Amino acid sequence: MENTIAEHLESAFKKIQNSFEEFTQRGSGWTLEKILKLELNIAKYQPLSPSNYIPLPKKLTDKKAILNIKNEDQKCFVWCLLAHKLKIDYKNNANSIHHYIPHESEIKLGNVKCPVPVTNISTLEKLNNIRINVFGFEDEIFPLYVSSREDLDCINLLYISNEERQHYCLIRNFSRLIGDLSKHKRAQLIYVIDVYTDFVGKTCYKSI
Image (cartoon, rainbow, N blue to C red; front, side):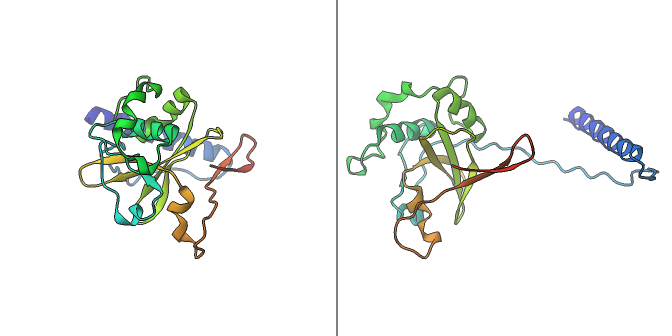
């Protein structure tokens, strides 16, 4: 750990020195006498790794827009993808895992292990030729992962957590899920927009 910190500090000093040298070479007229302070903040990295079933908050359950599969393993990501593919009706206990177990081999994981962290989703998109977006919930819906793919069929997942576990659910009706953000009670067509800059510096927009 100490060696890693020392390496990062040395790298940071070199970056400061190189940046300042570049700045002075452009005719700024400035000189660097000394660096008075360098503040280092360290935080433990804990990647998102959803696991087994977590009941939805009542606010989300009442939306009737989310399929929350009752799994006892760590494969909620796999079951959500299969649920999107099979489209089992709610009336047929779509949240029961027995619908999806026989089809497990249809989802390619490659070297990715379950539980699937959000950081590995782009890899699984390529393996399965699909587009996936992941949203979080803390009193409101917000994006955690926005796909860069352009596949017509898009899978939207909801990531929920409690003090002990994390869990993926399948969003079946995104419009209904965030419908109370509008004063209109009729169904809405919602577009989430990804804003990015292309290779010539032009700002572009893409609906997801």
